[in-house]
Image 1: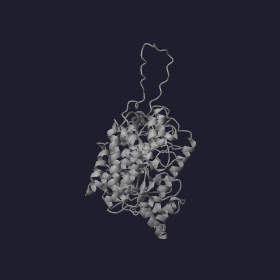
Image 2: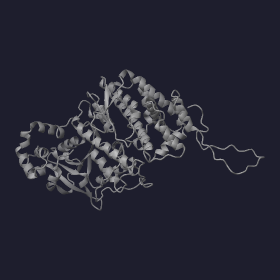
Image 3: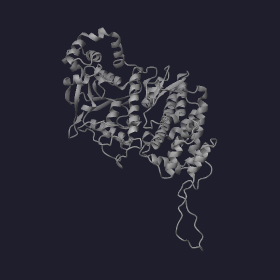
Image 4: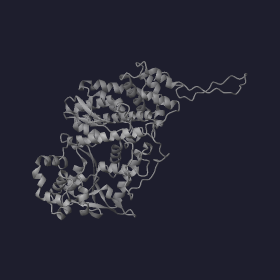
Length: 574
């Protein structure tokens, strides 16, 4: 959110030079967005086909951190949010509505299809790590890759140099950054001016990503350093709470000058005059809510959004903020088709809490202020049955398809078929898109294709949620039931985030279903759904061969035309 004009007011008191102390504490979400923006430089902003790939984002993250280390700086900690306080609910809802509105605007501007990107744009390209100009974010753009933050976290966790320093914390990253620097000294690297409010101790400072520079030789990192103790001394403010009092004056009256704010901060004018507002300010910026009921260690293997639902599962009204997908605003949210997988994940959390969780409020696209979409959570007595049903479907697909990668795409089609049937509709979007792929008429720029891609991404990520929540439940000492263990075994081959379906590889991912008996398997699994089997069989029909105009020798038997359709020789059984 940021304090109005605080950074601008304090810039004259900051010092530009080589970063000292050399110990860096990095605000993880700020790092992820900085890398995203670096990778977006020189791209066609309105084309999702030029969005950076997860591989590019991960590679650039490591290259950037390696460059910083090569300049003599030590990366002590990288903190990522694993839980945001309830006081941020209004702000989060507001941001989600803004993002949803931007998606609607993007859809209106490209209603007939998405803009193409340049062929091979994302293939092994180099990204400037310290560009002279900061990237511009003007214009109507698609949302960023949905899972880029957890993808970067996975990369750091797998890195020899950064695994031990990377932590998903049970609170906001900036609070843990400030606390670490206050206790150990160092420089917080962030994009959030809220860090200027915190007491960073005598040896703590803040540097913003946008102010960092690297000399041409690549040997020294410089930046504009905000050293809180020095700034307080120059402004004659108390080192413990001087900047927080100054910030509160700016919150209460954003239009006053720095001199006026300093004068009021010294006398604690607004602190005395508005004790209720100051209490809210303190709770929001200086002592925000953290999840203390579960040890920090419980969240270290979880994605930030998954960590939050795990830490909120004891709340009266737990909420799940799902990653924002590029899907069609004219259709039901792409998260809907995989809802039953997440319902099972939420139900398993009841084995941790020991008490019922009636509903979870899911936040997806949001057109107006809302408490989220209520998702009913099955009672704990149904967990075994629901797990067995999903495990049975997964096992059937795993046994039937030739390649492991085809399993998850086939399951995504199945989820769409189940949703379509439950809504009383006739043709699933997935089968329409698959028919286009078989007929070689697939248009990856169409909103139909984009929306089904988003449904596949939602299915993959819902399985990742289920997998991580099962691992968390098992770590709490109660273990998993036999049915859950079998399901957990099925999920061991779930692809990593870089191997999720994306707009770049979607045609190939659809072909996996076509080439590996995915459709014939679905005819068996969906045998009790009368409307679906004929549609599946129609997609599997061999293409008609064009008639030849050449005259054939009547003495020679006519050769049987060989079908190019991979389903011409498929076994009847799944």
